[in-house]
Length: 239
Image (tube, rainbow, N blue to C red):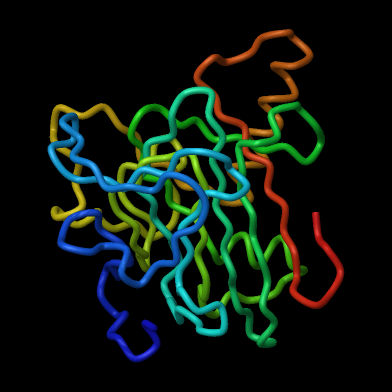
């Protein structure tokens, strides 16, 4: 879908809740998925409500097609309601032309050796490092393209785009090349939000902190726990 589009700029926009029909290229499934005006951010959002297993937005609509997105970072501007589940499934292709799935979810909240977490306050700009996940979780495979995106309930989505470099202002997890998020993607100045990068290195650091908190019986109330399950298509499962 994006294969023949120019992707050499700072950003490639995938979804914006503004406009007449933002989900024209998406397949909507399950319960309640609707567009509404959010007074807080002074703009429209798409809301997914219901079961985190069945309520979803999938792109491309036709599962046989590929997105062909080449930039390193996938960026979500999202609001996850307190005490509600939320998941993201991504399909990536590597240099061996293998299709691989990456699944990030808040469904699993018990601490374990495979549990990673990211702090998500009200509105968040979540930057998923596709190169890091592909290389570390698939035995040094090299990321080529992002070819499928599925967003599950429960959440409100403002924008979805890719960036070729890590955005400036990514909380305490700032490293490598960085670029400003374009002005068109900025939140209103009075909105409390955070920009955070999710990659293997940061998540492992967070996991160590979580284990220490468990031993000290100290739990952070504002922490959302992410369990990443990664699968290789037509092959063995990787955890």
